[in-house]
Image (cartoon, rainbow, N blue to C red; front, side, top):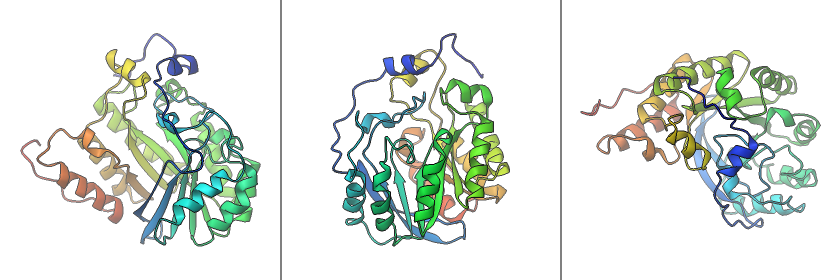
Length: 314
């Protein structure tokens, strides 16, 4: 396939197809929950995840829908740490803390630097803290936060796809060389990296989507990434619906996500996880969905390829 439109999917085009944002309250996080995740040491540990409410990401990526739950203004100092405090008071004790903010944690327009000391204080009970950031914003703020933190720090970055043309068409301000330099910068400062990898982004067929997600996992581990998280691309942001109508995009099927996860786990080069949120939308068979979901959950936790689910749909 590798079929590209004859128009530019730039900031203006992407934003022109957006719907309205949701109403959010900056005093509270967008969400928070507890989950289990396998550590790089092979232990299944409780993780507290907090989805922070803050300003929209400064970048406009083609596949992103996280802007729906963001503010249009920079939050006053103290609000972000207050959100974290609110969530942690309602979550059980955990080993790992994930702070996701619909953008880049080290963008001072999203997470005020003035909040760092209070965030660090709230993170004292955790052995590992995970945040997300675009490679373009890796720098002094990362080191400031890292040097204040007693826990291990892991930074998640969107590799998205190792296909250079598709990556460029996603309107993401990053090249593969820049991603590699970002991993190198983090590694030199004793910070591990998690890569977000897309399962079937726009412009790829189902088979190409599987192939390039697997090749992206290969690339990520090659440049020093410790953990890969595979995210099936979901429609719903306006721009993807326009591309779908033109034959440039289709959501992946569940079996493709299974193939990619099985491949990544079989390498045994680092943890590979499949994002299971809203998983049923990718299923083509209600009879075997629950069993296949359970299989993916076990693969995520055990990091061992599980026996395939038998069903007439196969």
